[in-house]
Amino acid sequence: MESQFKIGDFVRFLNDEGEGTIVSFSSEQSALVEDSSGFAFEHPLKELVKIENSKHEFSQYNQVQPNTREMLDRNVDAHAVKAASKDFKNRYKERAANDFPHNADLFEVDLHIHELLDNFERMTNGEIVTIQMEHFERMLAIAEKKKVKKVIFIHGVGQGVLRAEIRSFIKSYYPQCEFLDGNYQKYGHGATEVRFR
Image (spheres, rainbow, N blue to C red):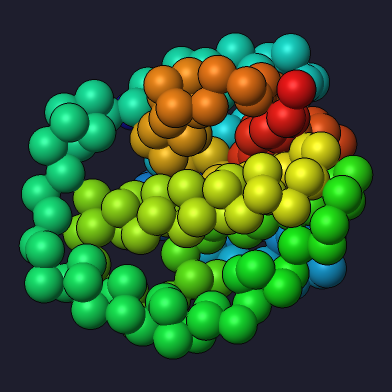
């Protein structure tokens, strides 16, 4: 099967923030991509989206469907989630509430798992999403309490599961909020902006 990519293609990463240019192919399944800092890293081809223009990127992104079975049945080990939650709470005990200034216009919250936990390698995708959603819910509640006008939740693109869960949660439990895609120039399709009405 012929690859849809070639050297020189500009691509964005599905499971990480950022973009870059393909400089070579390390195998039939992976490519070296040079990012804006000038460093080249290997990425699986299945985790790259070729960018011809923003309209093309948006259509490609919309074809990435969340795995609804994973959303409904997360395959979560309660002990692993409890241990991860404890680790997370120890790290963020003082930070969460103090990070939000009162009546701020805008605040950013990064939900990437490496920002939340030191050890997550053995966690399933479902367990990771559970921790990310706990942090999202906690930070959204604090933002409302502190009267922050807008919060940007940086979730990355991935398979779209976390993005879909965030939006479903807001629809169900925060009817006083509206959400939209974060600033494309800054976040690509990897963020959701939540506004309090």
